[in-house]
Picture 1 (tube, rainbow, N blue to C red):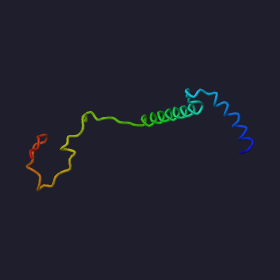
Picture 2 (spheres, one colour; picture 1 turned 90 degrees about the horizontal axis):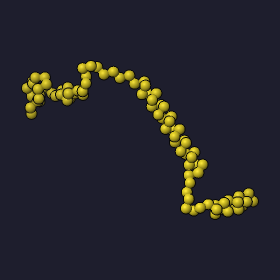
Picture 3 (tube, rainbow, N blue to C red; picture 1 turned 135 degrees about the horizontal axis):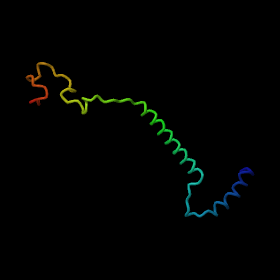
Length: 93
């Protein structure tokens, strides 16, 4: 070991023995990590608000619910289709 590292170890070892072994604190590193995470969350919220303000969704007055399943289903071939039913009437199988 070099003289500098030996000198550092001789000064740090007594300081470490003075610490209470039952007491754990986050220290400066814990504060820095917490502050970085807080800053990242703040930036993400700011970005999300900017993107949400760009959304321009206006629902048409007649469209209050999802489309009926019969309208969204693909058309079946003519030979396998049952007899024509009135619009809105339930299909029988």
